[in-house]
Image 1 (cartoon, rainbow, N blue to C red):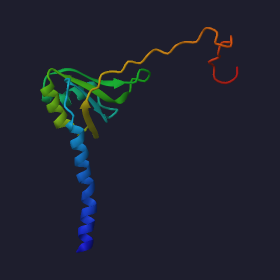
Image 2: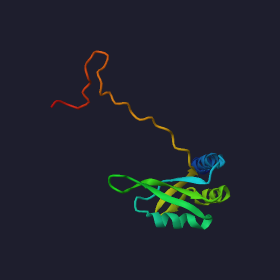
Image 3: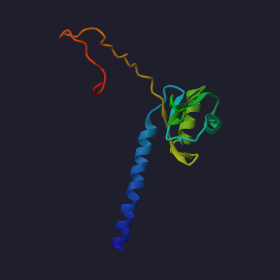
Image 4: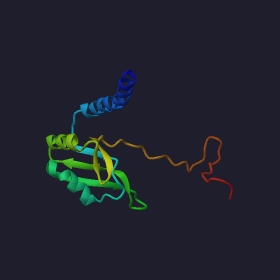
Length: 138
């Protein structure tokens, strides 16, 4: 009897931990109507993506981010609603749900960070020599 209760306790701990993590993940409030969706299947199209999030409100924009060279999905996308309330409803309903066989996660979208352009060192350096940017020997 004691062994059965210990085993039950061992197997129920992960579910309580996962619910705690889910509660932490949903605690943050939305400040914009734009959502970041990760965990998408590589086969999900833009139309299927938009249809999945359409029942929660009026969508302004829904796009899956694709690789520039190959055109394949990178596995994440963005959905923008007309109001924060619609975005919150979609987040609550679609977070940790299955979409085309994959579990997706819905989070608030963060603003894009500014990345400074790399400086080119075409001129001479402190020693008077230019650096060679090639890899290996020619």
